[in-house]
Length: 420
Image 1 (spheres, rainbow, N blue to C red):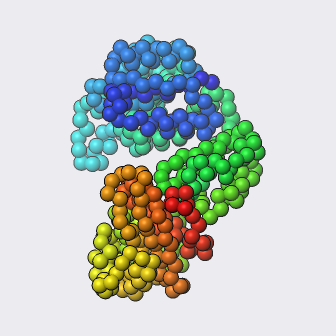
Image 2: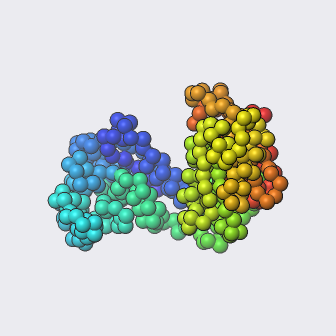
Image 3: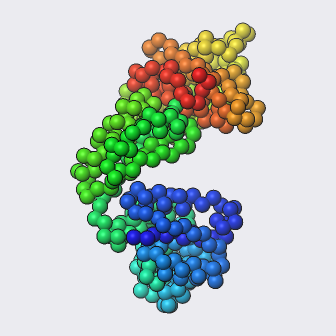
């Protein structure tokens, strides 16, 4: 089955907005065992859109149109879809009622131009949008089945996953179930991951695709599987999952929807333990991530952020007369922070000197210390990269050190992001 993705909007066509919607849709379809044959971007121009719909309808079996379902004059998808299909627009009463209720619940009157969002081509199939004001719809144009989706990423993603992909699978005649298994790691770059997993493709059935997505400092390794049943997926994926766990070892942070900070908070919470943080170079990202994961507010005791080592020392009443960047200094800060905060764990990150620019050839010496009722543990590394990379890398390394401590794993395994 030939599937096309047609994205609309002047902001996309001119490059003002990066088209992340296309990449998400293409990945999601591929993971479901569906193949995208063509991608097109068209601006908010009536003639261009109409021609694009007609041409796609002549060559594809299915077309996903993204964008153009809003209430403004440059949102043209419903109107031109009807024109291309040779039908009129009609009011979808149920969606209009939902729109009016949406505004009423917020103490507002629905603007008159939002009525446009309830006008759908005659004979089209309604596709619900439970989290937005732009409903989707499907209809035939030429020989293709068109699926119209909102441009708002959050709305589009839910509609694609829950409603469009199942319709496409049914249209294609594939009676399948799909699963995406994800491994989140820190310390392994794409090249090294590819080397570690060398030969795994030869051992995987054609129904499982291996892929990587790097978003520094983490690497996401994905297994996209297609099968006839959940039990078949379990059987197919089990050896591949085990192989990745064995080859990546301690560098795997967590799996699927779990996050590193969520894992740490969950384990501390289960043990009835608390944590306090102190950080340089990370811009408060360590405490921010932990606090966001600590939904009950019972785990994170405090967070101290500064670019100055002497200021950090002053906050915990530690003499800074002879305090210099060193493992001993980081250890003293961690022990003093734990004592004064009353937390069970104190996580401290200090940096010798941040890079002054984004020169990726620069770098910074980072020391991480964790104080607890167990002996003090420290980790020193020279992270490579500019200022932003140091901020991201030191944050991840600090949280990873905490994970390793909780799991009784070695802290000193070298990563690909530090000077060897």
